[in-house]
Image (cartoon, rainbow, N blue to C red):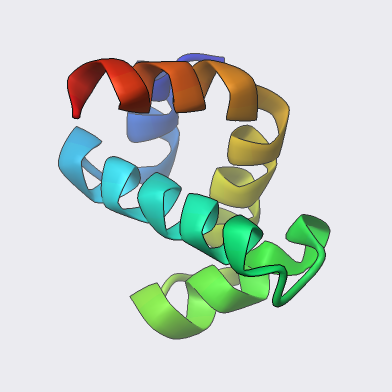
Amino acid sequence: MSVKKLELETGLNYESLWEMFVYLFSLRDSGETNMWLASSYLRGDFDLEKPIASKIAVFWIKNCKALEAEFARIR
């Protein structure tokens, strides 16, 4: 799945998704939680419904390396 498809499936725009991806990188780097539990953090900090937060967290987990490379490129 692409970020564009994730936009369509979640109803969130590109900038909002990237804000959440950056948040997930920070969460991972903090070591505060196992990333499979990250959707609960997204729900709390971004006021998302559970299915949307889960979809974003799973997308991030599955595409972490590619997202990290893209983030380094666009920074």
